Amino acid sequence: MSRAFLLTALLGALPATAGTAAFTLIFSGDNGGEVAPCG
Amino acid sequence: MVDAGNLLFRAPEPADVPAKQRAALILEQLGKLGLKALVAGPKDLSAGADFLKEKARAAGVAVVSANLRRGGKPVFPASAVLPVAGQRVAVIGLTAPGSVAGEPSLEGTPVVAALREALAALGPHDLTVVLAAIPYGDALQLDAELEGKVDLVIQSGELRGTLPPQRLDHGALLLSGGQRGQALGLAELSLAGKGPLLDLSDQSRQQQQLDFLDSQIKNLLERREKITDAAARRDFDKTLAELKQRRAEQAKQVDRARAVKGRSANVRWVVLDSGYADDPAIKAEVLKVEPTYQGLH
Image 1 (cartoon, chains in turn cyan, blue):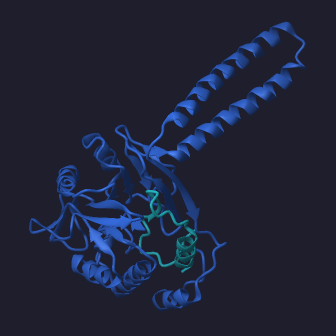
Image 2 (image 1 turned 90 degrees about the vertical axis):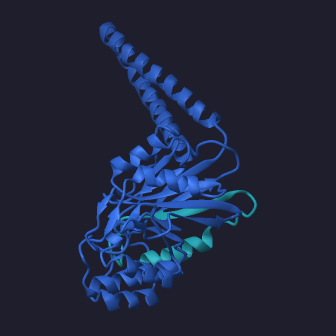
Image 3 (image 1 turned 135 degrees about the horizontal axis):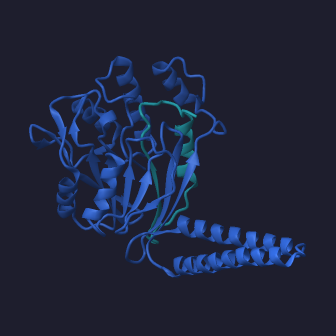
């Protein structure tokens, strides 16, 4: 599942922002039961 | 990471065994990758609410819905408050109103009243996110009814894809949810300050529009040099003046956008195209429930 691999990479790459009230919210929706990205 | 719902099943109708297996895999894997909260949308209830509860609990994912009822009683907590980088992120879920195909004893009650009640019950928090597995039109109404109380609405149910954020009339930003695993949304948030979230991606678009007008004016000035007929030149100058007027107005827009300080969001999409390789271990799990998987389709 390439989406899963990407998430792992993204979460590792997000900068540490402790104490600055800043963070990245990852969001999604409407996946519709897919287990792999659909082009 | 949060999900605006309609995550687990391809259709809201009662699910068969293969569909349940796929759903369980999706929740398990996303739970491992850090999914913290999910709203119960119609396509998450195709195997019933108890199935969703069980699999989500096992995956460590909080399921929320402020308006889903069984026999008049709430089925899930209305909200969850997630600690993130020293901030308290309140996440409230809304399920599409009406009956639920996957379990006839379930019902989604009217969303505005449910959201109002959920907001009143929230403790201290720094950001309010509504995960709205509800029709787009209903999502627009949330902002109108609850001015200033909601920061982000992430909406699913109509496959709206990867649209830019939409500023609603009373300050909330409405986000689409991507669709069918095609993309992930990233909202880089800064909560130092007060007021509605400033949309930094909109600032960028306003500047791009100004740059475009500048290039158009430059192009027209170069063409003007070659016009010798007086009447043609007068018509050309009229067009050029109108374009310069639009440029001046756009420059004011850009200055106004830059002058606003405070809480901000920079939203972008990461498109999951064929440039991203499969994870071998996860792919092996996928093949157990989707033996025909060949790659991006």
